[in-house]
Length: 347
Ligand code: ATP
Ligand code: MG
Ligand code: FE
Image (cartoon, rainbow, N blue to C red; front, side, top):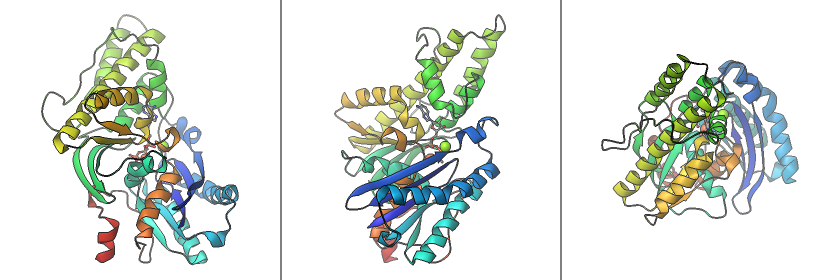
């Protein structure tokens, strides 16, 4: 089955063609980073308008790159939520319009199911069941994944998401948006002996996270320094490293705990923050010591992309799922409300 995937939940327009027999045929992305950079964050209305501008040309591009004719497409999958409602509606209405014109099925996909299944686009893929660490701009969750659509939430952030904490910390350190990669780069110059930030919620049992205190810790550390002198590049690098180490340590501790609690030995880490090199090194090492292993998406499929939506959509479309009629766009949509494709088919 050949599926066109469309992702417009936030500030990247992602489009891809996935063939369930041959794999990924083409993928294209337009990031709106420059558009929102001056505002220090995503401006929803600007995001929607830019998706409108970019989406159709990107769809043309993937067809031409894949050498595929319109008539060879079997179905369309789009991100139905969660995300910015206006941005989601651009993808949803385009998907439904094209599906109607081409007379093929269309399905709204859960954005986080897309992130979670992104490692399946690689040759070396994890088998079910596994624990998924979803670490992105809007989510930090540990999920027990028994199969596609069988998700049990083990823990999540009670306040900021890990990516959000990176972005806010970047802002305090005068780094551009989105801040994760910039904080990571600055941290490479940091002195690990200088500061030690707390590891929030690791001193008590449970699998929830809290990252907003860490952000405050960054601010107070910075303010204290600035009482005596303006923060130097070295000061900022030392703070970036202390922050990054605290986030990574916390994530690693909770992942280890989640595997212990579930008795599983496979972990999937996905979402933008899973692109972080130091996080990968630390997770790999910590899990290897316990005979467990981690799978990641390739770097560019950690952040938002059309390929993960095409893949997730294909799994459900193959099982016979499709939108009954009207398009779906939902800003809030908990992942654990999903059901397995076969179960949805029976009901
Ligand atoms: P969600 O998927 O929860 O709706 P989102 O789609 O905005 O949110 P993603 O695109 O998955 O999130 O990831 C973007 C986030 O990942 C940003 O917060 C960004 O700072 C962070 N990020 C990207 N690369 C890195 C990195 N190397 N280190 C740390 N954080 C990173
Ligand atoms: Mg983004
Ligand atoms: Fe995302």
